[in-house]
Image (cartoon, rainbow, N blue to C red; front, top):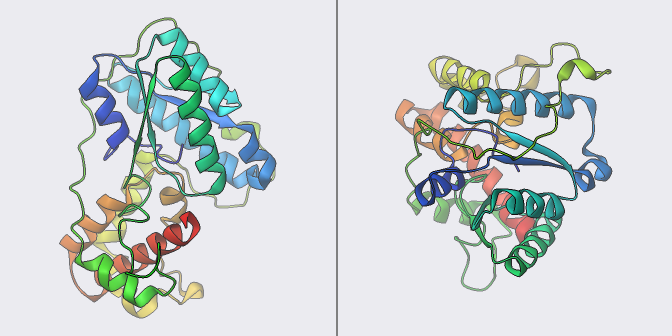
Length: 270
């Protein structure tokens, strides 16, 4: 879903720990496109991410399976062909994601297949894991951040060394940026490889001045990592650990922005 990477991927790691063969699957959910998310720039970055993920999986002996349509129907179809016992999924927070998850759980259960939903994949802390005494979520950031900062952040997971995909599971052709029109000039290349390069460059340079200049949009002093976080080419958990290792006021300010991101996720979840 929004976890298009190999590094720090709890659902993939859990699946590989449980079985010697897995099917990495991405479903182009038509309901997401119909809701207004089929903008050219987003589709281009998504296409880049899928192609990069497929390349990384092939380097490890696997491949990415891509389907389009209703997510529940497509997941169940692939699970049937693969004779899967389990499906592993990253938790998400929107109302659509929650409805989709419950429908998928019910449909898979009817086929004797279990759904495992993993928290802290698209966020640093799971929504609902930090709550005030009187509510199911924080409505004000400062007390949330105080509690958020006290919580231990899990250690990032290494990328798998090998991924084996069973035969017989078909895939659509991967989408390509070149098939799109109306892209913004200078749109960066999406995908985990380039995202990790951007992150490394950011930690070596721009983060030092982030505390003073992160609100200066004309000064081009932000991380430029938002698309990578949104599509999951980068792990927010890994970003917190690497920023804290870098240290300094800029790193502290950057971690605070990641906490703001978690804050709004828990508001949306509630």
